[in-house]
Length: 444
Image (tube, rainbow, N blue to C red; front, top):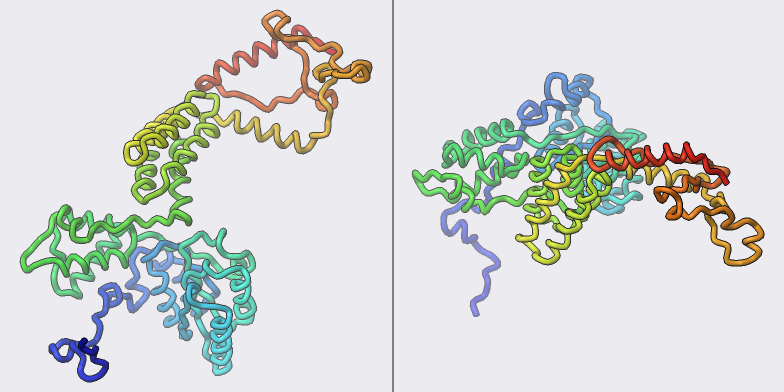
């Protein structure tokens, strides 16, 4: 068996090629000044939050919150340059407590020489609570200026003491104009246009999903694939890049953001928007049974008795998906989404149940009135249990008009149905019974 060479000239050198690994396009296009950062004008424009900070040449600790590929790392590096701070970068994925101690000790030593440190912590939300707490002393005494980056909601992922010492700045997904700027810069540095027709170029911009780094990676793939003089249409381009997977983490913010958008679109009676978010979740690989469970919840919470059929339809969609599976069963979920989105809305039952629960917790020790209690023993009969109970079916219109709340509590009103959908009919019934109760004034 031939032995693998361990010394001597590299194969690259033997072939007359540069042995240095080529730099990815995204790295070559990394901005060298804050003015070159695209898509974050609310932070870096003339009146942006960071622009105002830099006017004083002083920074407080910051948390950058935003999707991947929006410039968080780049901006942190450039902020260090602009404020003459030493830039130190770590990732919470690869850093433990011992590593943090070394970083803090180095920053203290640097500080003694008059050099400040901007410590950039990528994926800061991956540090546990104790690790996050370790930053507090060095933030407070000025040893470091912390800039943490996270794709997750800081309110949920970072502890309160850290958040109280840092300002959260939101980075936005890049819009199509910003992505187009990046592609134009890429063409300038490559010295050649992207071999795409207009529709394919627009499709590439959409595929990037607001991620600048992804747009440049896709562009690089296309240049590698193109033969001299070749121009790709949308179909050919999609075949080359094999379509980038949607940015969507089923256990993190993308998951909660989209289900929230779906729920609120249903509540807002917008079936088209609801279908869009449903399609995005299914396309990203969300478990359809999770989605249909949420649709059942929507039917209960936001439609309620305004259309009792909504819950029936949502449950039927669950059963249909269980029976058919994907992709056929997904249509049943879509039909349920359309039904609940177009149904009349009412949270009256939801509100009534919440009010009843609060009252039960506050005054849950009160005994029901004795007339509605059973009396299985003579002692209980002697105490008045069951005495005076009126069997409603024996009363005129099957309504006795008796009070059923505890005497010490008195009558309460929790359920107030609106004049919408089926609850219009329920309201008429309640008003009719209230009128009968008042007329009969039946008391124990």
